[in-house]
Structure formats: C-alpha cells, structure tokens
Length: 265
Image (cartoon, rainbow, N blue to C red; front, side, top):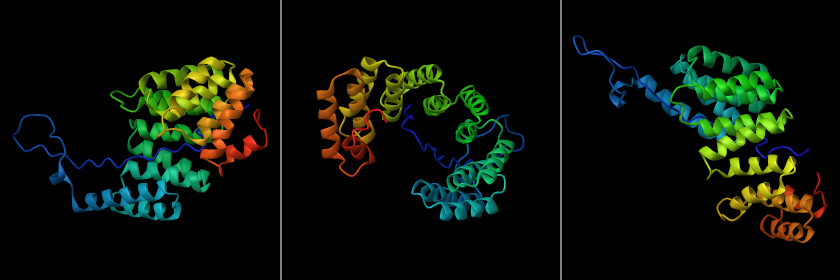
C-alpha cells in the first residue's frame, strides 16, 4: 500500500507575539488590542529569536533553530509557541522524549492552542499512537474560531491513512479539500487515497487539477497520475506521464521508480 505524499509533514508555526494588555485604572471593562507599545524589550527580542528559529527549522538547520529557541525561552519562559517549535525541532532530530515533553509543556502553558494540538497530534501519529493523535486533531478542530482547519484536516487525513483507516482518511481529506480546494497538498493526498481505494476516475480528476498548474506540478503529482492510469489499464497514458516525469524531474526518486517500472510500488 502506498503512503500518502505528506511523509514528513511538520508545520512550522508563525510567531504570534502578543504583548501584555493593560487596562487603565477607572476605564471601561475589556482589553485593548495588543500593539507594539505593549511589548517589552524582552518580548521584542524573544519575537526576533523565535522568528529566526522558525526560519532555521524550515531550512533544516535544526541545531541552530534549537539554539534560537533556547534563547527565546530564556527571554520568555512562558512562551508556549517556543515550546511548540521546540517539540517540532526535537522530533525532527529524533529525540522523541524531549519532543513529547516540549509539546506537553506547551499545552500546559496554553491548553487552548489549536496549533500545539495540531503539531502534538502529528507527533503522536509518527509514534503510531493513532488514537491519541486523532483525539488531538479533533480537539484542535473543535477550538472556537480556529482558522486553520484545512491544515489540521490534511494532517488528520494523512495520519488516518498511516493507520490503515482509508475510508476515514477519504472523508477527512474530502472535508479539507472543500475548505481549501487550491491547496495542492490536500488535492494530492486526497487523490492518493482515492487511488488506493480503487476510485481511479475520481483520483484522476484531483491529481489532474494539480498537474494542470505549472506552479503546482511536482514529481509526486506526475508519478501518482502515471500510477493511476497504469492501475486503470491505460498503459499508454501511464507511459506518457512517466516520460513527462523523466523530462521535468530527471533526478527525482519518482523518475527512478518509473525507470524501474515500479508502478505498484
């Protein structure tokens, strides 16, 4: 059984920096929207460190990212986003114990953070703790005013596929696609699940949407399209897509698999 294409999904959180809100004595109840003047020097420095940490993490420079996170925490020990990113970094570095500890502490600092639930859920999925992962994804999706539901649905769907729950994964990714039809990652993973379930016409439709866009086409999308046609019995179309894959992405792993005829790999 093929794996969904989001094999190493790790969503880096943008640094959302909220300074303390002060209510002047004698004023009406309620809190002002935080602005730059509400931030202390330490919080501004922590914001910069966390932005740097996110950038280093995204580029795969994990040790440097971790060092920036450590400095963020030194400046702001209660910064849950720093611990959230710390969890992602340790997970990427293979230190599962520290990753788990980091996510847990981030949730202690902010039990309502859907972003932490999302990333901790993915970590649990990588640990093959599928029930715990699913529960965290559902908690994130139930968070009031959560604006990134499509991302969590994508992650949840990929995790359900890893657990062998293809029917559930199909339903979840269908919901994700309805929320964000322009997202190539969602479309490809949805098409892959449909392919695995034998729904070749539907799988073809979704992967074609991606391959028709020069900005979204990738080795993964072309190889999936080729395998769909091969499984559907159209060897000529499968070969044409494979040739396109070899021309556009000659050094890709997918091009090598085409050369070796691993259509069912």
